[in-house]
Structures are given as C-alpha cells and as structure tokens.
Length: 313
Image (tube, rainbow, N blue to C red; front, side, top):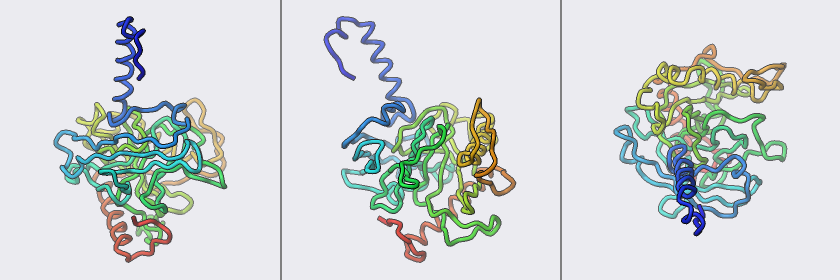
C-alpha cells in the first residue's frame, strides 16, 4: 500500500489501513495477496509474485516445501494472457514440474489453483503449450466465462492424466485428455496460481459429453477446519451440504437452466451426469483414482501413448 505523511499524522487511520492490508494479504493460504474480482480484470503486462508451497505441520513432505513464482504476461482478460510458473528463475510446468503428492500416506496432494472461488473466468493450465501456463479457455472464438460464479476454489492435480484412449471398466467412458480436476471446499478464496496442499477426501465421477472427468474434492491444510477433517464424512459435517452443491453445480452449469435464490430451475437440456449413482466416492477410492491417473500420465510421458498435441515439457 502507499504510505504518505497524512497517514503518519493520523495514527488511527494508518492502523486501520495496516490491519485491512494484513487481512487481505493473508486471505487464502497466505502465499500472495488476493485481488478482487474487479481487479482481476484490470490490465497486466508482466507481473511476478511469490507462490510458496508452505510447510503445513507434519503432513507436508520435504519435497513439497519448495517455492514457486508466477509471472503474468498480457492483459487480463485477453486471448494473450498467460500466467507462467517459475522455480529458481526458470520456467516450470505446473503439470509436469510439480509432484502429485505432498504427503501420500496422509492423502495430501499438491493442487494448482486455476480459478479462485466466487469468480467466473474459466481459467486452465494450457496443456498443449510449452510449460503449461494458465490461460483463459476459449469457446467459439470467445473468452469463456462460467454462467455464474464458481463457489469453490478449482484447479488441477499435477502429473495426472485422464487418458482419452483408456475406457473405464465400470463407467464405460474414456478420459477427457486433461489432468484430474480438484475442488478445494475451504472457506478462503485462494489466488490463481497458488500451489496448495489439499487433503483429497472425495471424488465425483462426472460424465461430460460422454467423457470421464473426475472431480476430486478436498480441503486445504491452511483452512481453520482442516485439522479435524480426515474423511469424507468429516468433510460433509464441516461443510454441510457442500458436496451435494458441488455435484449440482457441475451437473447444471452447461445446461439451459438458471440458478436463482440458491436453486437451479427451468432445465430442459445440457446437463452432465455422474457415475456410481451420483455417489461421492470416499478417500480410499479417491487415492485409487489419483494413482490410476498417475499411471496413465506415466505412460504418456514414457511415449507409450500418443500425445496428440499435448506438450510434455
């Protein structure tokens, strides 16, 4: 923030400003100040900031305690906007250069936050571009926004891949050719580009236009409730109704319906569906899903599956 002599002459105003700035800077996981939804749309040329994978009690493996910076290029929103990840000054892919697990025994993954909660721009890691920067998705030649805010932090799990050539034996659907998605259910809005350690506790098997698109659900270790959440049941008790809300949001966001007063209505077409009778699978099944998609990723990187335009760098 900007400090001038008038602030120093008015200690009360200065203290209030300092407090407000401190709260803003430590919203989310404390890795970077969060810009408002309005500020997120302001032009940016090149901006670098620190994105730290911070130590989180005993759950965090030593390998996850490295730091990253992000560099934004191009105005936002625009087709040219990109957010690059760097480590020790060199470009690093958030898909290929960051470990899947922060602590596998504890079921804690590293999550790359692409979309902050309560925002609409559909941001994603560009898997077909070198170093996989975050960009805004395009549809029919236009920048893509969700039709309503997404109410949770949303991102991807590194070094996973939903293979479009591999059919799931039970669901009879092929992968969507992307890393596994993750929904962080916690109370804080986490800045885009953050690398966050998340307890992976549940999974929805979404079928989107015939493709399998797993939605892992978890809570950041930095969330005040995280210490007492160690299972899907714990998650549901800590955030009652939110798992159902997540399912219905993803079921309906592409439909022709409207979300009014907390409810969806007027839907006639365009809904996604979910496997396993709409059930959210538990932590053990979630770990299995992550491990299976890690295996598909390993095949991709070993050249045993055609990349078909995906960047492996």
